[in-house]
Image 1: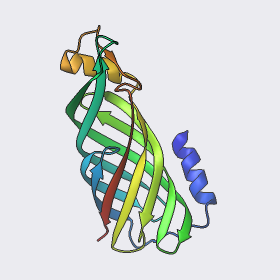
Image 2: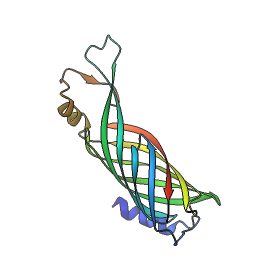
Image 3: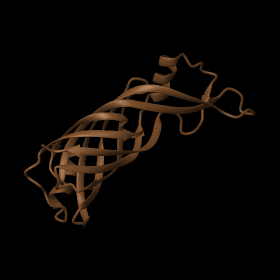
Length: 176
């Protein structure tokens, strides 16, 4: 349903122009929304799908005794991402702005999803740059992390816990 809605929005969006010559790209990215890694893009400067995999740093705060400050733990995870992007506004000839949504799979948090914004700079060039960010939600993230790292049940995660994360990624897209 979400994919259909995004396709309809893309069809109605006339301000962002498509570049039909570059339907494929290779991406490299750095950040905490999609992780630190790389992937591929299939689509144009208006609508497409990207698949990115990489290392995901996970910062979690938790505590056993509420009278003490929370402990900060950093976990090293792997994350796979499959997202649809729709760029519907072109505020300048060199930039496009839109939304992204899709699947997130984490070795420590399980299956989840994400929704956010997507900004492309020089989207009509062979080398372009992007900024992507938003919220991710892993419905069973707390349980998966407890099982993976043997975290006792009396240890409470601080709000919002491992299930909800926010982040941003910077990246580059190479189009052959």
